Length: 142
Length: 211
Image (cartoon, each protein chain N blue to C red):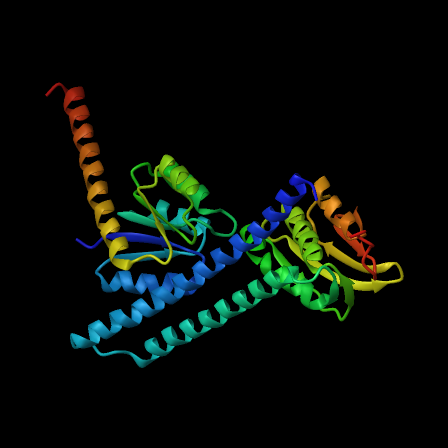
């Protein structure tokens, strides 16, 4: 099944080229150039993974990460950054990011992480569905 | 120079270097994806999918543009690195303001602000590194309260009392740290906050250092 990915970066050419490469690899890609556009996309669609640039003008990557995690706690977010400091990486993971990659990123490593994100998301959705089913069965006394 | 001053001096050099390295990483990331896309298109062509010449031309244009962008960043880095070569020299202040505007473009953009440098044809004999440090400090101070859309302007004019550099367009009255005042004093300059602007007046001749 094609992975649905939201790609967020303020560098237009980077966004276009990476989006094309991910599409060639069979992924369904939506792009956003800033935090607000990203939050709109997350609220209006469902994604297997979000690939997020850490440093963006206005709302930065950490802020976008926090907001997405508040709205969609199960969302799998991979942070991309030009400079991966240990401090930022730890902060991102603490806030619920699934992974952290440094630019320039290797497309195959990124694709692998996206694939893992999709599997993890499916598992979380399955668990949620199972819990809901148990709750319904319990409440009806079946 | 005291230990604290030396540390602050190094912090400034570190901040500028970190910004440059980050900008270069971004340039490399765009080139990496462009070259990778060309590779992907070649792979697809090998499997029989025709290549669109327009797409190739667009990716090649993007890569060439990024090479020019990277070259400009490295040129600025080189100019900045050589600013410590001489304690005092004659400077084209138009070029100096442009350099500092470009070196600060990342924090300016991150704050959602813009910085316009007004062209000028003034020259000044002073410590280039000290002038860069105080201009950098002024821009970062102005960005502390910047909001989305804040439009800053940086200009220089020659006045009777010296070269006046004005950073205007701040959204509210700034509160520069003492360290910025100290850096200005070391250049023999007058530094003031006026009507949501930062004003620096540099003497036309550098102060005696006593060295």
